[in-house]
Image (cartoon, rainbow, N blue to C red; front, side, top):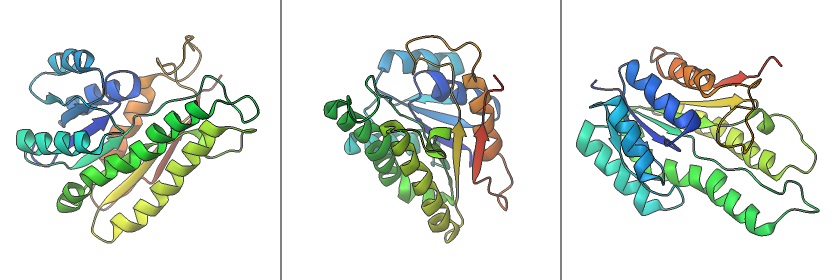
Length: 224
């Protein structure tokens, strides 16, 4: 598994957990980062020796730095990072929106991505590695007064900027933009929408391209 070590944030459920399973089957070692230590340990036990649980909060830079260090200690390198952790809003829009919710969303969806990249940048550069970001179709279209959508516009903009930066040192950057996905992100089930497996397959597809090819963006929409 040399040269195939993937660090995943938001790894305890949904897209992150399924990506860990699929990546491990594709030959990757996976470091699982999220706040829920019990869920991470259960998932790591399911995957086996190719998985490492490194619990922590994506808004905590020292926790991220410590998790990256533990990943390198366990597996020898960090060759790819999947910055997947994200959150939504209970009160969307501006007029009735809750500024405290906005702060939490900005901390996770924007600062959390930046801190993940800050913590892993040196290892990615050393490995000429691959950064994958969870964007959204909401970050490609304009939705009336959507604060969540605006946070994903940031992610898409950052992905483009990082593609340009990483190209200079042999790295790659991909943004995955799904439509609505049936995950615990939503309080109600969405059985006619995308599944975590659909998004995980796209992540692994991008990761496993030959080093001379960069899949810069993958857009996935439910047919319904």
